Amino acid sequence: MRTDYFEFYGLPETFQPDAAALKSKYYALSREYHPDFHATASPERQQEILQLATVNTNAYRTLTDPDLRMAYILGRHGLLEEGKQELPPDFLMEVMDLNEQLMELEFEPDPAIVQRVTQETQDLTATLDAGIASVLAGYEGLPVDVRPQALQQIRTYYLKKRYLLRIHESLAKFATRS
Image (cartoon, rainbow, N blue to C red):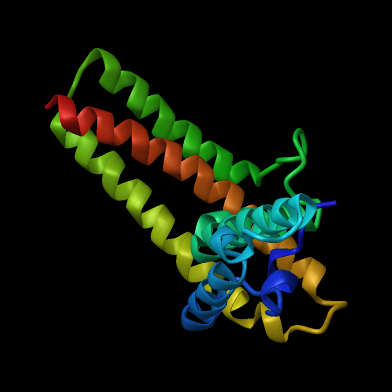
């Protein structure tokens, strides 16, 4: 049974948690579950404290990183299962075009093409980010019966963003070569 990080911190499930509240909870629990304060406890209790300290660290690391947090929430709802990552064909065509340009760069490095592909990728990313911002911001306030549709939109965004991240990484390699 995996710990619900939001429940662990007493916070609602949200894509945009209050950073100060997260940090405050993390530090309070870090003190509470510090092994030094439980040195005289039974071995079982010491083990339990160690596990709680680990959960606290993992929860904080996950919930403070936007990408990890998004993957965590989507995973909690069973939306990141292997083999179920279908994306809209128009997006896949755009990405395929960018990947073909990257393959051509492998054989014929061209700073102008690197610049153009970088710009196209940045534009796609900016459009994606702008399109999902209101969904992420409003998720917490949505009625429970509407959340599944929002989660589907966020899932599609997340998967597209992962594709674009791989292109950005490839472009970074070309930039270091030239």
